[in-house]
Amino acid sequence: MRVQLLYFDDCPNYEATITLLREVLSTDGSSQEIELVNVDTPEAAERWQFRGSPTILIDGQDPFLDMDAPVGLSCRIYLTPDGLAGSPTLAELRSAIEGLT
Image (cartoon, rainbow, N blue to C red; front, side, top):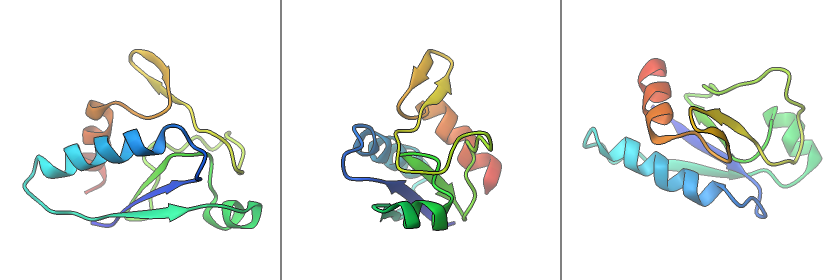
């Protein structure tokens, strides 16, 4: 399984998302690496079809993809059970990863 986190430097939520991803990935005892991808130009955003920071890709798939969200350098908002947030919840991440592996 390949796990990538796409972000840009000024994103206030990507480090918290890394922490959540590490927690989810460590629960199965694996030492899965998280590849960090800094999307720093509009061209890179277009190439990655980047719909905001942080974006999580599991084997190249975005489990939280909103096709209506614009491609570009922006903050990403996730709809969680507790309302809008800058990253998915731990339970949502776990479910997404299990659903794609």
